[in-house]
Length: 266
Image (cartoon, rainbow, N blue to C red; front, side):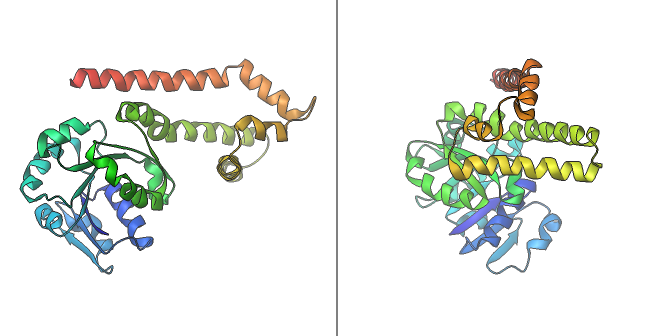
């Protein structure tokens, strides 16, 4: 694949590293106004660092935009004269709708929105994506790219705000749960390093049980709980204190906030 990442900041660099590591490129153009921050990617076979967005567009078929939202419209306007029927435009810019992209480049382009989370840096992102009507034909290409960096799910654009809460903000929610588990482990006698290790790998194991087995969480809970046992005692105490309802209410509050921000922008 001939790919260009327009705006190789933290997210763009993580995507680039994943593509290079997985040998997923024919050529890879990486653009940035100041190349100092990506010099460690220089020297890789078929990887080109440049400050010239237009040159990157001309030499590539798949364009992944990872720029700041404030710069996106100008960049789209700059590259528009150089877009052809072969180009696939993948935007990772949060809150920038497909219709706004079409306003700049037209609806006759393959346009995809992809929303990875910060776990993309370790190849474990949950990336949600949507597209314009024409872009549906190129969703498999975007999936092929981001599946090398975690897992993907194609959804309607109307669900992208909710996905931001569940997947992007969700990283913070899960970190808080892991931190709480760590604090409990310290109280139970482990030192801080051991406590975090126990919490991290237990949460990883819980997620992988669901991923590998395809079970509902309650099925795995049933495997651990025994009548009058310590697990059900702990679970019931957590529910009495509002664990599930607090998490749900927090996510709904986060969704309401992002919805209000969008209304204010409009």
